[in-house]
Length: 437
Length: 179
Image (tube, rainbow over all chains, first blue to last red; front, side, top):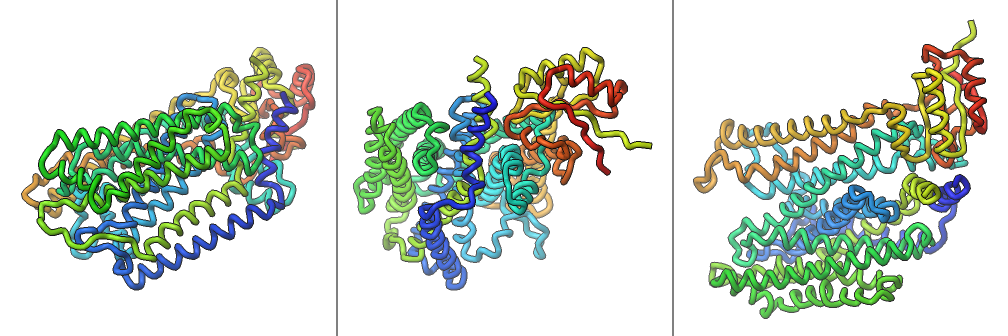
């Protein structure tokens, strides 16, 4: 087994340790870096000029800021939930996809966090949501979903990053021990915190890791529900529904899984990791994506059923969303997140790289339009007879959205370059188990 | 007086050989043992009597503390210190205080578990005597090590060396102590 374990470690460890990485990576990083620069520009412009640069206005006070926030949180939660379930079920897939599913979750939540802060208008005063002894001795209003969201996002960022880092420690030690250049040894050495692989340490490490994975499950459900509560607690007829948390959690899961699939397929192809993320893994992921797309479909039907049962203005609001000025958003969401993924009934589509990329992006687009449809289309019908002009995103808003995609891609590219994307110690463990059985 | 080493270490090729060695060492009466492996070995951890039951308790206590603190602080701030009447809703609007309390309970439990893990493992540390052993870098890759520590009551450098040598290891080496 030793030579196999050695080979397994090499294949994964060689990626972060190799001094050269090819032009494709540089090109991708350059493109992502360009988008990050765009992000910086749009953030500075909104900070200096104010939210007037966005297309938002009464009653459409939420535009791309909340659409993209809800979208990124969906990716983060779906990916986290998936990673946690794999760890808890001790599923074979976890070795292959767990690490980067956690990475996807962490980077997505970083992107998500940008939106609510900048949408405050005066982002430098974001700490006002935190209960601190202010001069006027007024405390935050804790009955507001805004404060729930503050706790939810900060908890999500802290717990996800801690879990990701603690899971990485043993692999950072492997990189430290395999590195040849002193400076690289030193960097990984510091990051590995002096991990020495003692059996005692392993036992505690695994116990703590699994325990926090359990904690992630309720965290994700509450976090995503908190996002949904921000809609549900308002008096807007289309939003004021108890089904909102379920809708956000389930469609968010579909979206998180589809992005995990997308990244898995790209890594497998780009880093030639076919041996670790094998056909079975990709097939299984594809089936999960298909199942979650079917659940999204069920929720769209449930939305219609809920509207029919509620009657009155709520019913009118939902049907206006489907047929009114913004109907295109609703139907695009259905087509991209439910109809197109049905291609995954075919095994060949699940196994092909193109299929994975296509469906992964398709669901991402679909759920993005779903959020757009809820946030903008849902506001067309209100208790007031006149609701003012419509909403369309401005260039700075589009730049902000593209910018966060660039930030996500850049973080993912750096992760792929400098850290092991597949858990090396889990791989060694699996190979040993296979040998001995 | 010559300085005592940190311990004597034997290197093995497979986890099974390491397991055998640990059992043999326990039979021979050694109690201060440490083993090193490139992946978790739960059976070996059991054999060495590793206890991890403190970790869930830390999580539970931290989680409850965090949740109670969050609820109590929301109650105190919005109902006692600065009563905030919003549309005539009760000052202690407990349903509205629940989401943040649950989330912060998870925050405390998660952060306490992972941070106390490092405290329990006494990490981070910059150096450890075992790192001085030539070839120990493969403990993070494909080699398995057993170390009998110098503070074992049965410890005697020559005897331990002979004992470990008889277990057919790849190598037996002294782990020099460091300041």
